[in-house]
Length: 386
Picture 1 (cartoon, helix red, strand yellow):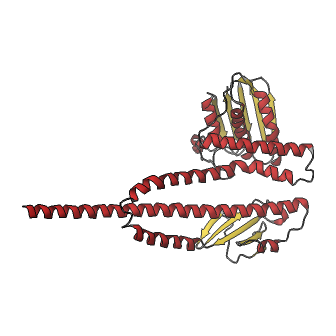
Picture 2 (cartoon, helix red, strand yellow; picture 1 turned 90 degrees about the vertical axis):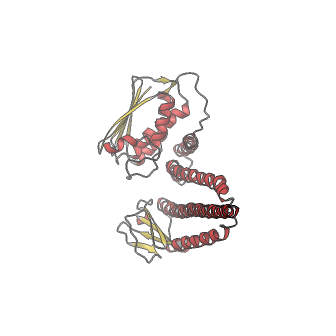
Picture 3 (cartoon, one colour; picture 1 turned 120 degrees about the horizontal axis):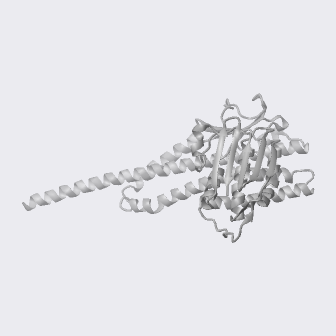
């Protein structure tokens, strides 16, 4: 009986060890897979960001050279970068290029076997350049090396770290993954929100009339907007808004007019006519920065999604602010989700879907009623009831 029990205990122990080792292997395999996913995604994001930065620099040089009527030598630019670069006109005919492979100009960024290709159109035809194409090799090579290293490492550390792997995964992998996701989202959101004021700053700094009062005011407003965007992102992404609550009602009319000085400059770039009908004074107890967030995002969306030469009408009456545009509108099937973070109803204009999420949060915080009506190709109207 004792021998039988010992045999049974040994059998149970062996079964337990086999079960534990099997589950540990699965755990390690999951960790290795998650690590591979994180590293490969980080690599793709890093390459993508690097290509975007390079394209932005080249685009700025081309626009600057065109505006300042300076010579721009394309062949010299091809030599200055490690990546393969090509400049193409509106017919996708190369002006200067060292890219030999076929390019798909219908896509913004894509991967083709061992290369990643970015097609950038931010030059808007300056110096005859419609598209900047940047090609980087080594994508699949990196992935294969990463897979090989992970496989070898998994086999080497499996036996040694089987006991502590679970604890390490819980203690280190999860927070690292969360931080990476937060950082990735922050970079994307910052790029989206900062693009407009930074572009205005670049154009103002490169203006021939740098010291003119109007240009200096444009620079001041753009710099102020960058600061405001930083506060927006902190408010939105970290749910921390440390502004003090107002002790008295504020006159919304004056704050809206002040913000319109900056927004009108953006509207002028698209030849959009902005009309303000200041019919009634509206007093409301709200933090100034929160109101600026609210009104800026609604009006900047009306500009961004408007048509060239369109119109925006802003009406203040009966404790309501009405913002009406003649833009592309929002399809009915997309109207339910417009206040969700990162939700975008159209791909016609760049962005990551942050503006209306900020608007909705501010309205909830201050009990402001918000409503809208929209029709495709006719425009959108927003109502704010204070």
